[in-house]
Structure formats: structure tokens, C-alpha cells
Amino acid sequence: MPTIEELRKTRIEKLEALKNGNKNPFPNSVRRDSDVRKILESYWLYKLLRKEFHLTGRIMSMRIHGQAAFFDLKDESGKIQCFLNPRDLKDKNAYADFVSNFDIGDFVEVKGNVFKAKRGEKTIRVRKIRMAAKSLRPLPEKWHGLKDVEERYRKRYLDLLMNDEVKKNFLIRSEIIKKLRKIFDCSGFVEVETPILQLAPGGATARPFKTRLNALDLDLYLRIAPELYLKQLLVGGFEKIYEIGRNFRNEGMDAHHNPEFTMLEAYIAYKDSAYLRIFLENILRTLIKDSTGSLTITYEKNLIDFFKPFAEKTYEDLIKEFGDIDTAKKTLIQPTFVTGFPKELLPLAKTLENDPKTADAFQIFIGGLELVKAFTELNNPLEQRGRFEEQERLREKGDEEAQRLDEDFLESLEYGMPPSAGFGLGIDRLSALLTDSHTLREIILFPTMRPKE
Image 1 (tube, rainbow, N blue to C red):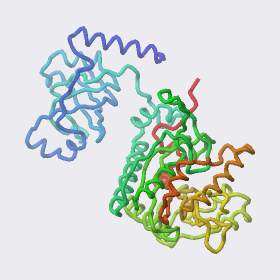
Image 2 (image 1 turned 90 degrees about the horizontal axis):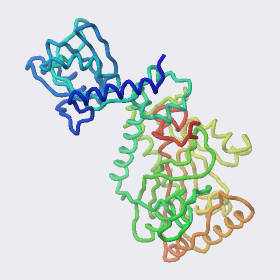
Image 3 (image 1 turned 180 degrees about the horizontal axis):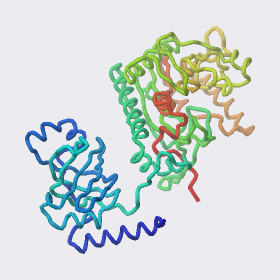
């Protein structure tokens, strides 16, 4: 069996043969006035009018039968069979050229009309064909069944090309983000953008990535959360804001953690965590209903019901029963609010007015995944400084994930931040939930991977 390099060499020879025949294997432009879906859906109209069209796509299979050939042409909208016969072609050398120099994986432009083959399959009768882009490597034959699953993630372009279900999941992810934007925009929120490069990484308890800005001779960090900048916008007069963007955390990797991930963070002035519970429950129900047409989904073989009111568990009860949250979350399959967190775990949250040791906060778990962290925001600058100072003491004791004291943020708080509530929603985990994906690598287009040696 020939090696990849041998096959590549053969394809380069075919490329040179096309060039020697005055045919450009990489033309600047192609003609395309239809797509596969339109042709399949309007087949009878095309047939009735005997309408010719131009279509461009990738060859996914080829079957040569002497003086005739069939090949499947694929574009983003679908796949259709094409029929090539020397008698139908205006260029009498085109058929021999196709047989000699075209391969599976090549992009081609065809001109033709439609008919039904003997087996009843809707087919394009090709009148003209030319190369649109020559591929130099063969497509994998059994990509979906690869034993080395990580190879699918490293070469996502092939994964998408050979596995329609994978592409479908990413289209669902895109729709989820569009629907979330629509929900927030229609609710009066303003979408904003805050810096990814930050002088002090704040807004979450996590170990940051460090970088260097040569122009200003500064050490900077990739953001672990946009929270502190978003709160400064509350100080500046915005009342309902959100941001969808990437965060970066230099910590462990597993099925539900990736060093870079997408979050939606939102803040609402003059509201508290009690308001957010109702707000988020309604948002999640609306999103699930719009995305699936139902209020039930299946994740990891569990039927999850969004029609019922969300359950509630306390942090203390879960710790007593399971020892830690990571173990406990495997039991939180149905939508559940977890409340009663010690204030030390959330240094940016207010405490309950009747319990100064407990944060006025909650998390939402669904399918064993932590999807949301929300709380009433701490806006007392003196108390916030004290919380930051306690975090600095933890850093001195070796806690690399402890939060930093951010003087710019503290100064902004001293100008006054309105009573507010805020939350973060994990887009990757939400997408995994709605596509029944068992690892975030299935729902992040290019997950972080160790290079293959």
C-alpha cells in the first residue's frame, strides 16, 4: 500500500500535468450560481426548464466505468451525484483529463443539468468540468471510526469534512450563541467588550497565563474573567451589560475543562441573586425550548426535565454527604441551584444580610455540569479591599489561584457602584449539554492538545 508521501508525489505530478495542459489547478475565481440543497429541493423545476447551472464543490467519491464516470460532489449544503460521459462534454479531452488527473478531495466546478439515474438517484449530467483546487493529500477512508480519537481533534478540518454529526454539533453551538444574544438584546442588555490582556488577572480564582508586551515593557496576563472590567462599566453608568468571550486559565484539563473557553458574563444594576434565580431559570427554559422544541433533553442517557421548578441543595449538605463538590456534582443531574457557599470561596460576592459568613450566591448544575455561577455583587470598597488582602495572604502561603489585589478596580468602587447582580454562564458546557457531547473537546473546534510527536 502506497505511503502518504508517495500518494502526495503522484498528486503533485497530476497537478503539473494540468499546468502543462494550460489548465490552472488553482484558479482565482469559480462560477457558482446554485448549491446542492437548492438543486435537490428544486429538482423538478430544473428538469422541467432543462435549466443548466454552475456548481462548485469537493469530490467525495469516484467510480470509473470505462467511458463513463460517476462522482459525488459535496458542498456545505449537501451532496449530489454527478455523471460524466465524453459524449456530453463540450471539451472532448475533458473526460480523459478527469480520469488521469482528478482525485477524491479535489474541488471542481461543473456545468450541467439534472436527470435521474437508473436507480432513481437525482444526478447532474455534466456538460463542462474544470479544476477549482487540487488536493495534494488523500482524504481518510474511515475517519469516523478512528481509534486515535485525539487525531480527530488535532485535524478538526478532516473531522468536519468526514463526519456530518460533528459539523451538526458545531452548527447547534453557533445557534445557541445566536439565541443567547437575541434573548439578552431583546431584554435591554448592551453587549460590550473588555480587555483580554490585563495588568492583574482578576474576577475568578484561577492560575493565569503570563505574557509580555514589548512595546510598553510590561508583563501582562491573559484574562481569567472579565468581571472587574464589567463592574467598572456599572460604575460608569451602564445598567444591563453582557459579554461573550474567551477566558484563559492555566490549570488542569479534563472532560469538562479546557485552558481556553467561552463564557457569557452579565451584570444587572439594582438587582440581587434572588432576581437572578428567576431570570436564569426562565432564560434556560426559553433556550432549551427554542433549541429543541421541548422542555426535556437527554444527556449521558439521563432524561433532564426543565419543566419542573429547579431543585435546591446547600453547599454544606453536599459536603457532608459527599466530601467535596466535584464528587457531589455527579448526582446533580436535574437542574439544581446550589446555595450556601462560605464567603471565602467567593471574595467578590456580598454576604447574606442575616449570615455574614455565607455568600449571597448560587451555582446552577445540570447533567452533573456546573453551568452558572451567580451572586449579589460586593460594592463596598472597604470590604472588598479586605477580601483582596486576605487573598494576597493566601498567595503568600503558596496558593497560586488566589485572587490579586487590583487597585484600579478598588478605586473605581470608591466612586460608587450601584447594588448589582451578576453571573457567568459556560457556553462550552451548555453546548455539550444540548448536543449530548461527553467531553468539551467534542464542542470546541480546536481544543488545546499536546503536539503529536
